[in-house]
Amino acid sequence: MKKFNVTELIRPGTNKLAVEVYRWSDSSYIEDQDMWRLSGIFRSVDLWTRPNVHITDYVITAIPNEDYSKATAKINFQVANLSKKSRKNIGLEVAINGKDNKGKDVSYSVVKNIKKIASGENACVEVEFNLDNPSLWSSEKPNLYDVDILLNNKGKELEHFCNHLGVRKVEIRGDVIYYNDKPVKIKGVNRQVVEVAETGSDYFEKALFFVNDRLDIALAAGADGVHVGQSDLPAAVVRSLVPKDFLVGVSVGSVAEALAAEADGADYVAVSPVFSTASKHDAGDGHGLDTARAICDAVSVPVVGIGGLNKDNIPEVISAGIEGIAVISAMVSQEDISASAAELSAIIAEAKRSV
Image (cartoon, rainbow, N blue to C red; front, top):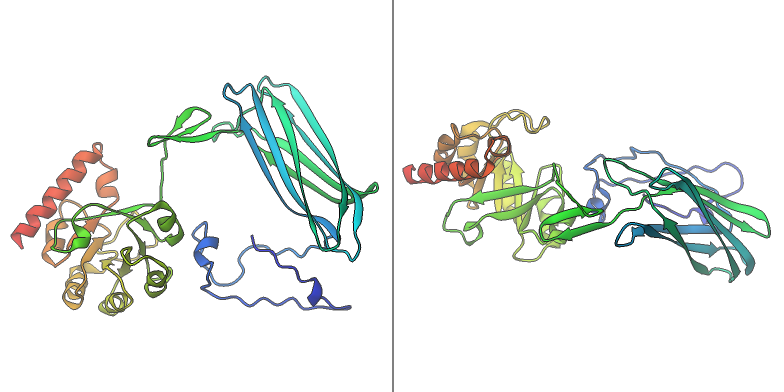
């Protein structure tokens, strides 16, 4: 959520609030957390009037102890004074209400006094609670406590907020994620792995880890590369933001798009989709083998096939010049995923020997 202070722009009488929107910006991928790539304002916009002394931010954490008999809840506040004078005796009242793990109603409260905040300055305040027998949060039982926050000055209410907190402990042990000491199985991830048999290119001598669409996650996760589509961040922009050895793949549907991607620095292009696929409902109709063959003839970078591929049609895709494949249902819908991967790899290798 973006916040802008427009106080200095407001004039007495009627004001017009105008926003200029750009499709791409420096923070496009940072803000694009839920894959909405629409130009314009597609969520609600609120205009707030805030007192000169107000809470600019607060962060809630709640961590259980080793045996989960207690939990420490901390709330860190930042309180700003935008008035032209210092303000004294700012009161901060925080209450936590809910049920413990035995179903008993519990209530905790803390009152803090901020003696003085100079004009234009911020005060940082931390409140801490010790919760007995805490109800734990999990995806199966999302237990939450109510948090009530009141900011006042000499008994006059300035701001009042209501929020929630959940008590949980998240750990990674080896390759397993644990919530409250219980292992969690991740049933869905935004991940694309491209495996290409040896082509003579140094880039494709092993299985590589690519993140689909999200450059920020790819960089944070230390992935080998990122794969972007025609409606994602342009390949030239991606290339300008990543290390030299970071791989960039681009989905294409025509020779023109493939040549543009290569010129923008793509390490490979992917004909997507080659055939119609049920894995992505918005993928559109398949481009077919003729388009795939034309793209392979036009570019010098490796070409990958995506969409509607299975063990029956992979040989003809490879014969069209495609150097590797990316699949979803052809592998993960099988009872033995490892065996399916081995079978597909063998089919690719045999198809390449036959070309």
